[in-house]
Amino acid sequence: MYLVIAIIGTAVSGIGSIMVHLFCKERIEFSKKPQKFTKSAFIGFKYRPYVISYVATWVKSLLSMTGPMIGYLATIVVGSDKTMLFAIPSAAGTVVGLILATLLSKKVDSHRMLIWAGFYCLLIAVLISIIGPFAGIWFYLTYFMFGFYFGFENLCFSHITAEVNDYIEWKTGERLEAVSALVPNYANSLLHLGRTLIIPYLLMWVGYVAASEGSDLLESNRANPNYEQTARWLLIFATVRIGIGAAIGSILFFFYGINKKTREQMYKDLDEIRKKRCQNNLLPDDPTCEVSDT
View 1 (cartoon, rainbow, N blue to C red):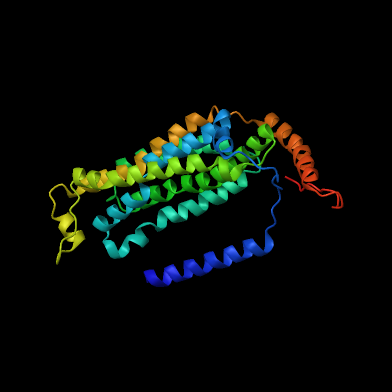
View 2 (spheres, helix red, strand yellow; view 1 turned 135 degrees about the horizontal axis):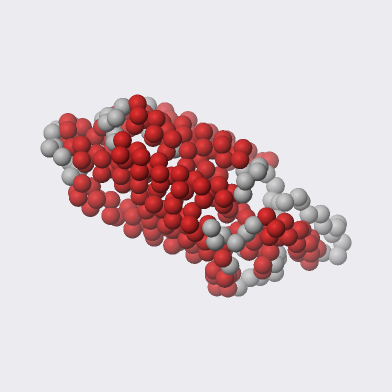
């Protein structure tokens, strides 16, 4: 079953990549003037929206353990052969959250949606931890609602990343999205690695019983006198930690610094900046530049 799903996923992903290459055109022309790497890589740290967005991402990367911890929780609650089924409520909630975020994005700024979504994530994480993984339909219903946050997070962070790239271009006059993300992405990878390294120690601390040869993982953990306590701690690590990270991100985005007025002026100026850059890139016999709508 896993192999079939992997093949289907790879095929769908491959089709999507081919469609992107065939039908998507680069909207923004980059300057042909050489840029100094050391300057371009760190220039974003001068600007508040850039710093806020990446610090929020770092906090999330450091605290989020939802994926691995839900996997460990599923193996001791429903068994390792049903871990994918265990994740369905959250996955369905993510889809619903993505649809809601898409509808709201036409009227509400992405960073404002993310502020409310972050506090919502913490509240629903605390609620699901109180209910616990053995509450039947109530757990799965709350787990479904927990998934809403990930839909909002995925869409809003995508919008914010694009907006921050535009903001840096507005301030510097250069399109630096590739190199300006390099340092934050390396830092994010290190935080992700550090988080991954502490997971085995957390499993030991909560009393998770690892599989041994000839033993059933589900039954081995159920035989543990602290079985329910272990499951609850795994649930807390999977939900409350990311809830705290999301709430911290919400607080940070209060100071984001890009509002409606700033955004309108930014895109008005960017039209001229991009047109001028395009004209500077042209040879004398090239046609006149046309700037795509932002």
